[in-house]
Image 1 (spheres, one colour):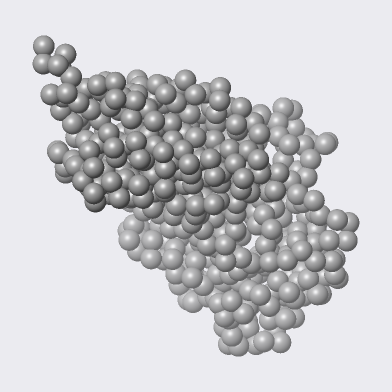
Image 2 (cartoon, each protein chain N blue to C red; image 1 turned 30 degrees about the vertical axis):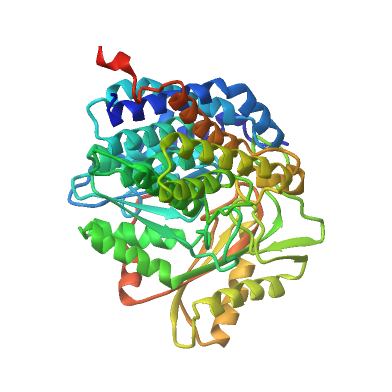
Length: 331
Length: 222
């Protein structure tokens, strides 16, 4: 394994240090708890927190900043953040209006965020609510979770809810909004090649040279089917059709499209995928209001991508366009 | 006669000591199916519980169990910390507002713990090779004992035997949940360490009771 790492056990700490060094004016870090928080002062706002195992960057630490998340709790690679980190983060970012946890549906993450809410209630902390994000259409169930997994669609939830929180919406309103975004977003992904975790040093699952995993989860969990490699047009149509059928989206809908790289796929290939999806949507008379193409929610160096569609309304459109100040802005 | 609170704290101490002593066995079991951190995690968690228990004297029964749950979740980490923590937390919620508990309350508390662990673990079922394989039969046994108005010793004996049998059953099944599920078929032939934690808890409670516990201990009246 050749990677820009020193020791496997230092990967997350060194990554977060690099993030803080690079954005000292906006990003704060509590290294021993792996809490990344927003440094600029804010008031009259519900605080928004997300968290999960590391390895999905830029999700979530790199979405901390004005207009999106107020803190992110990073676990070890592919393992849930600790209870004390979540509790501390919530106490730290609360400004008296409460805290909303936005959590992708994975067993460990969900369990610890739910327990953190209960602990804050038991010990007297800020009022907290949790919304579980489950946008993945690939599986009804998997070994990692009850029900559907949360994947790249989560980024739309953070973006829209984060923007609304800046406008001073209360905890209940934001919770309702988060559910409405989750109800209108669907995602499906596939892997060309598995990922390699720093600790293990070898691929997390085996995929033959001519095989692809359709409906893959964020840690390489199996999804809908393992099949033989096919050309981009065929693969991307499979993903897009699965997403369209699930909601279902229909002619006349206006959508935001996200083509999300899983970490190891060149941006150019992601744009090929975006072009194919645009053609499919045009044929179905679904209007794309805005397209997002990049690595948003990854699985380390996994090759492949996911396609997400969010059905829009005027509120969602306005909040998607709301300015953000987060570390992954290019310029 | 000892108060119920003293008994509860005594049982929790006995459970903690038992599981701390089991470190090596749990680590060996976990190295066969998982990442060999079960024993050390459980030891860390229940050592923290032992430190916490003397400070729970002024708490209500339910809050003592909740405190144990949070302590375990804080210190063990991983999915096992979340599940054990959830169990004690939910049992504690079931005791809320209660100053006296009977067999039915114990059955209800255990049932609630089992139900939420199953949901939180991702709809875990008996046969998935997890702690639920030992917990659920024990819960069913306690429910039955409570409905037959059995005494506490009988209730705990049956519960321990049911949990032990459930744990034995995990040897021959393939893991479907938790870290061992990564091994698929290769997890066969090994006992699930989580199921051992559960039967050891019932065993510890039973031993505490049999040793005179503090249930009718004259020393307490001195």
